[in-house]
Amino acid sequence: MDFLELVTATRACRRFKESEGLPEGTLDWLVNCARLASCAGNAQALRYAVAESKEACAAVFPALKWAAMLKDWDGPAEGERPTGYIVIIGETGKRANLNAIDSGIAAQTIQLAAQSRDIGCCIFLSFNHDQIREVLGIPAEYEPLLVLALGKQKEVRVVEEARDGNLVYWRDEQAVHHVPKLSLDTVRLIKK
Ligand SMILES: Cc1cc2nc3c(=O)[nH]c(=O)nc-3n(C[C@H](O)[C@H](O)[C@H](O)COP(=O)(O)O)c2cc1C
Image (cartoon, rainbow, N blue to C red; front, side, top):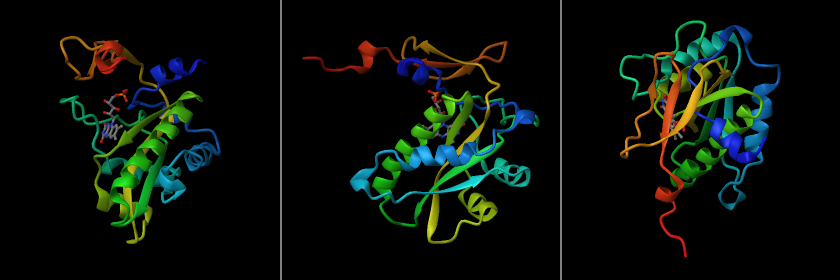
């Protein structure tokens, strides 16, 4: 697959084929991809917590805040929930700005890697930090930075060109998720 096709397919996924689960070893493979991603000063300051058992996944799920723009949707119903989670963690109170950048790069690396295997992913910045810390047993010296929810993708997501600057993602009658993106001419501000 051409890389542009992969990036185009790599849309946030919020509904999964829960009964299918993830192939054995998937979460470790994804963390391994993130481990090799570029990071500031090659400091490799990020660490990862993974949840793959049914019990752990059930405990992580209520801590997440789903799709703020879909006002009458509270998140995936039973049967459509993620079957694995990766939490990116950093040392508490250290390298805040750099960890924010590094964790974004790691998250996108994981999301792209997942999509290359038809696994859907949604990145979460909005989540209950105390709950995540508690259910995964993250020690006080570390803090959760981002949560990634993963599973076999069920939701169909499509990119569309943003019209009149409207960037609100939306769902149609067939439950297809639409994501408006600005055009190349809009974002490429300068060309010399
Ligand atoms: C840093 C970051 C934080 C995000 N946090 C959340 C979140 O808390 N809850 C959620 O449902 N989606 C979250 N998302 C997913 C975004 O809503 C999604 O990426 C955006 O709507 C664009 O859709 P796309 O990823 O398909 O391009 C987050 C994405 C990023 C990159």
